[in-house]
Length: 370
Image (cartoon, rainbow, N blue to C red; front, side, top):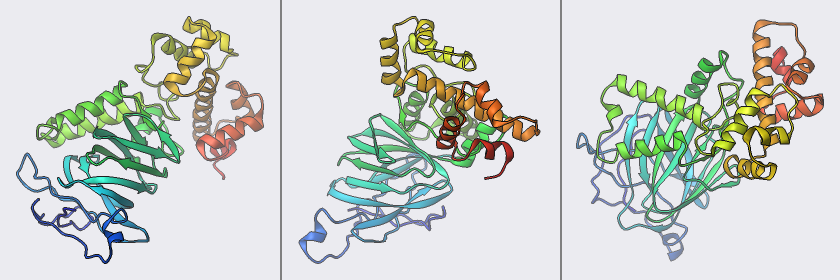
């Protein structure tokens, strides 16, 4: 496995070895040299803009049957385990596309690998497979999509083929929360939780493709100046919040309807506009101008949910926004009043759904005590 000299894990880089230099661990026995061998690092890919070597840290440690490495980001690094199944003679490589508050890089481990990534405490990781094949699980669920997003405190596992190359975007959760707070008027109770699968022809999916294409020929245009980088980051953050479904989508203006057909967009708009009213499945189908069974199929196909579950999520987001707003103003209102305003007639059911989504009870949001 080709490797290079590491930086110090805090962003201070040292000289990097050339691609022709090798470093191999001494082993005893065929077992260590076969499937059970694990990575120490990856080869250097020369920087295309400046001619300097691009450096990264993959710090080896003891991890039982697996090798622990550290994956660097724009504001730190976190350990994860990489199992090498078969090595690629061409070696691995890594290239930084952008380093600001957000970090963007293209990475290949130079092998067929299984990667186990523990939850990152303070960042979102976005993966777009550029070459090869892969399989990804988030919180134990298999995600079939061209790109995925993994949130803070979410565990993920990946398998990448021998010839893989992956675009990785790392966004600090504080940056996402701050942008969301600007939209909502209040800080969110916790970092927004996004649907892991990013649909390729959604607005955000197309943005990721654009970023990878912009970096393919050298220095991306958004690295031209600090001002350009700042505006690029704002564009990326707002596109993420607008396009990728999350548990605050309804409160901040809905989600990008591009992935689905016009009928699905009409159904979503109807749910948003009539969330406080008594709405049936037939009402939604009539607004979408399609049959009930077709409506159910379209929601399952494009949003992986049912029409009534989607409506319930919209109502829950509105109720949460009301509770947060009332808590900030000190208005005299009860949880029951907020729940019934948004169609939740069974208070126990509402409390259960609320806790499942927001991680706390409705009363603790309203009154500020856990």
